[in-house]
Length: 373
Ligand code: FES
Image (cartoon, rainbow, N blue to C red):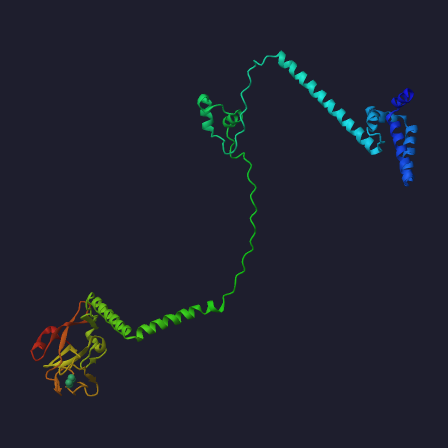
């Protein structure tokens, strides 16, 4: 018995595993599927015999306690899976024990300097929690807090440094990348529609229709008459602002040299413009050059000179006048009138229509009424 126990104690883990597999394969063979299990122990044995290094490694991996755990307490032989599970549990337990030991050692090492060094060293200022974006103080408040720390409390170093740091110039700030504007293609222009073309015509027609409706109604007629009357009154009022000016030819005009008028000659070219005949005729035994008026002394008609009959004949009522202007037929009650005539400084005859001479009044005797021929 003692020798068996010694043998069991001397068996390595690999040997135990090989024995277990052998037993397990034997069981499987008994149950009918032992062909596959038989190969495993043979392979394990081969590996055991071929590689002593792998054996040593397995010895290190599997502690001796596994052999003890491999023994079932109930007396039944454990399977390979159970043995492996027990070995893993043992390994984990060992690893946990190592960590506990390391923690204990760390505690011892930490306790030693604490006992030697007194804790009289003043601790540094407690680092305040970083200010959030909402609790970030203003720079002036930070400086005020630095001057009166008792009232406001400690200010974090990072905040103080940020407040004392010179402000970054705007030019150094990186310019934001400008967003490219989307290129909008130009909108195509539409050709003018038929409605737009007909719009002016429609507007004109509408205006004419409104105007016609306004004029056609009695009210429109009344307003139109009133507007016309008011317009005429306005024009009449404006007419009074301007004087009546009658544009007439000058009263004095020259009719040429006396030599141009031989005896018995009648010049009719001034009849239309000046209403004057220049005649060289005999009056009371004296040849005179006189300026006769072309106005009939009956009712004011204009007689005509009849060269063949050597008389002035009025077309209105038939009055007749000799070449010297004395009336001799018709209703004319008196001779034609004379205008003043004289020889001007330049030797030409000058007629002045502002002065009249009547024969019935004896005015033809006045030397201003004729020029001796
Ligand atoms: Fe000359 Fe009557 S107007 S005759």
